[in-house]
Image (cartoon, rainbow, N blue to C red; front, side):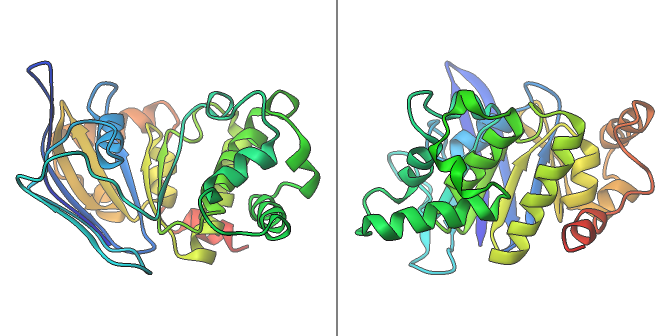
Length: 267
């Protein structure tokens, strides 16, 4: 579905990302974790064509449509049609002047869709993220942070993407809302078979929802493991230290498995 080989990003002579390689299967979740400054968000920006990264190979195979492949020596920045991005701060990601329905419908611009069908698609997307239809007429200032993040998820979902990138999607939310939104994300993934790449500092979230874990350290891959293997037998002392720190801070329930979140999402 997504195959990245030897991704590199240099900015102003500094090495930001150094030969990152990983693969994500269709319908699965990859959680990217690491300390601040490790290159997590730079990775997302590179994959979205927002940073001047170079690849040995970047291959994206959507479920419908032709595969996209970039090889070494390609000039320009890549784009991954069929992908969307949900940012960390939902209020900043939404125009304060637009009603939520207008912002959500932006993902369908350029498509030949009748207004009636567009409005129905907005309502369907809102219902998918557990928001009532009348939220289409609200502005960002009239909703909570959690509701705004659900609206951002609806904006991504309405285009029926094959792949969604998330940059710390829960960090701006309180604990109860975090769990609710996480369960919504998991349920949507199961319903539509979307692949997720999620940047997160929350190892508890990764333990519950990730299929695969990619650990970055100083712009390099420290570990790339199946989630169950990572939490039971981490590849390096650094990864073990991350897990122990999360346990000590109460962020990681040692009883949590990669199946917990999915079980709750289908309950």
